[in-house]
Image 1 (tube, rainbow, N blue to C red):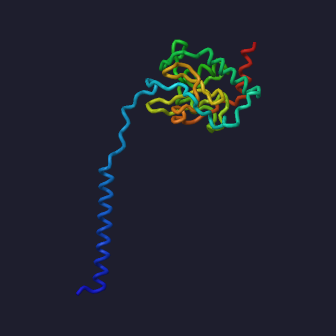
Image 2: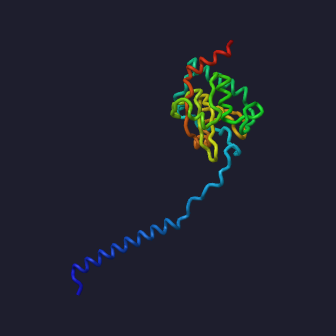
Amino acid sequence: MISRNERGAIRRDARRLAGVGLLLVTLAGCASAPREAAPPDDVAYFERPLPSLAEGALMSPHEDGASLDFSNPALARVRQALLDAHERWVGTPYRLGGESSRGIDCSALVQRVFAENFRIELPRTTRAQVQEGTPVARDELLVGDLVFFRPPGAYHHVGIYVGEGFFLHASTSQGVILSELDNVYWRRHYWQARRPMEPTQLAQRTTWFDS
């Protein structure tokens, strides 16, 4: 006849074996579970067609009931300088490594706009431009801030915020255009923003066009 102590030991052994079995089942399930499909071979970002403006896209967070005050002379002046740059460059085709009206890439456009409109020499590459100035929260963007994106592929992307939820950039599919930050694509791949210089200082640097 099995004693009470022996019965207790048997129950403890049974529970221990059940626990080991459950662990083995769990591990087997993890091992046999299908892994997430590996992404396809990276296609260089600049060889991908990118979307343009989306119909009915939402505005940026700080535009929701709190638009930038463009009666502020500095903000208005910087924004106008950026819109003038858009008029000069709009439709210029995208070309990786390009730096002219025959073709230009995103970081070269940013470099040219800051040099021509504000007499500021920014680095040539996105990798270097993202080190410029000070970081800015997305809901605190001001005109003239650089906005950066990390889409799939080997390259990052950069544009210049012009206010009211729009940024100026060189799109691979449509060349130089204005796009909305809250376009589904750009919202998904938004990375960070940097402020190379305060708008009041940028505005002062536009005065040379008046002479």
